[in-house]
Image (cartoon, rainbow, N blue to C red; front, side, top):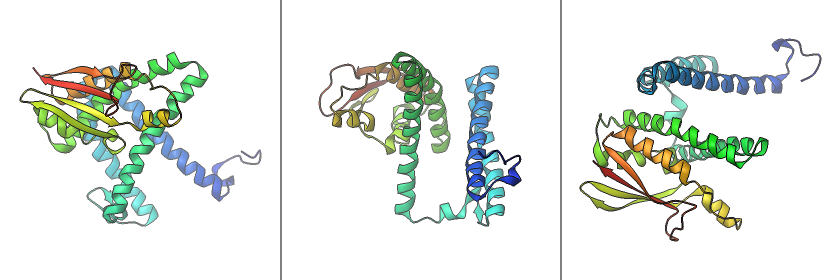
Length: 247
């Protein structure tokens, strides 16, 4: 930043545009910190309950104000330019957002790995999944209106609405009245490593946290068993597989 800049009025057009992006960034971080502190003070269940009311109210306020400022219409708390997108574009946007989410995850992992080491990065990664996975499950559960105990059918629906479902290829197998096996047939991260001639990333520790907490958040009666996940050996048709059982 130039030494002549003493206030926001001194910024040129590009600098103001960067400040707009920075304001968005600060808002997202502050939003997340609020959730983290409510979870710490009041517990995860209460934080998720409050999140269900905070998000539609907060996003509605922000979208309405941005629409008024930038001159776009809104309907039901959504920007009209978004709801009016052609189907192929909104599908592409969903894919782009999911890939950006995964890229963001990778940037944080590498930041910790390069600053400290792989062990610290894995510890942060696994802990992050322990926080994020049940929250994502609760968001999907509310979005689909699955109810408190939707069982295995509810879990299958929820797995199809994860961010990962837009990034990877997954499938269901060995379905019985009280269990099924979920396979990750193509994984964007592992496929990239394979193309580079690298070994699989050993993601089992994170996966145990991720899938167990996700399934339990969908229905507390569901237990999770790892069939196989790197560094475990696995067949070519999948990278990891998980058995979910309704107890």
